[in-house]
Length: 425
Length: 154
Image (cartoon, rainbow over all chains, first blue to last red):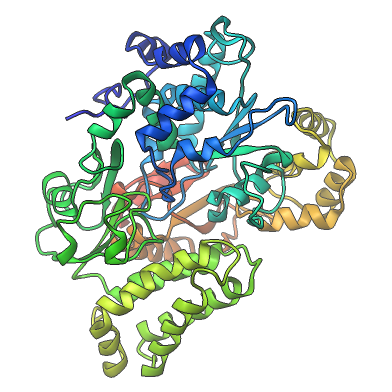
């Protein structure tokens, strides 16, 4: 089984330095691109590889790049931004890639920047990732020193600056236009779209924002080709995926597996199954803003397309497991409290709707909820849903709620009828 | 008044950007790094230096959770209250810390040693519950190991 993203990583997880990475041939794809490929050829290969955005959106990375004009007379500068603001509850995959193999990300950023002819690139890093910050600062300095960044990279005539920017908190910075506003020193309120960042992004210039894992795939696609990338997945979507599991399993963690692995394989083979005394009730497949999947979905391939017919989505691919000793109402209350707190406050449905949802869930959890509250919650899953809000924050918040109301209806009713939480003594 | 050192550091950031206002968040971080928090007069001074309104600076300062507009203790304890840490039991640990220090989320101890705040997912979900004190990350925190962790922070 091929594991391109983690193949360079040392068994103890310690940071790969430049020397190790160069010896492993890690920068060869950069050389291959800068010495012999046109930007259009790079985009074509990545489009053909079917690399879909690993931050959760699942949009074709190559197509995103193709929307950017490379006509230097019309628009002299462009930006590439790496979204490293990992803050989706239950998600811990980009941290590993940055801490353990920073040069793979830098190589991916050089190639991706070249593809859109960007002259400046940024890593927008979550402030809390202190180890990632230290590791990346060292790796960026090494890459400049070795001539992989800066002026006239490897004698190709291509110039690229790479800056590390650390954030100051707030989940909404992960939304790409909120991230751009934050990078401009403003409140991270998302922007109206269109225009999309590919037309007008950072400082009004064409900008591409890609996730850490997405960019880390790019050097391997260049090295081995689009057909190879498509062949290492189990479905039509290219590549491998970092899948993770948290919650009451025996061996929580992160594993690189072919895209399309099933929940059964991930939980039973890799996470060691449920802890003794705990039963599986459901899972969020890719972070807090994805719909629940349950026992009957155990054998569905976890990729971008296969989860849609069962009402969910892959998101970040890091599963959060709900067990039988955790109250599903408390689980949802925790999620909605998070979403309410992290709303940027710009649009009314999100600013007012999410705190209301949270209060209702709190009252049900505390045994003071009414049957009518279920209807109010269902109304909100529509009212705060897609098309009614400025960005995807509130619709994301409604995903676990709408599926939770469906799958755990009896648990909600038990709280309401018995006037207390059955999980509390 | 901003100190000469603060001004120098802010002006260094301004050089990287197309216009000075972009350095707003950097300036707030610089002031906080020197003073621990950002007071009203600092907001006005940053606004003057960057040629933007003080309302805009305050709008940015109050948006971001890691900019403190109130004084904090010598050490800031951030306890992850997100879903994976809830499942794995951050609440009993929080209650223990809260009782031990005599403060709740959002408060500072009388001796100014600790400020206690909640934090969104720290990305250590496979080693939950997680906590940060200042820049240090702690995994799998328990009621039993908290006292030992706190000893290092005077």
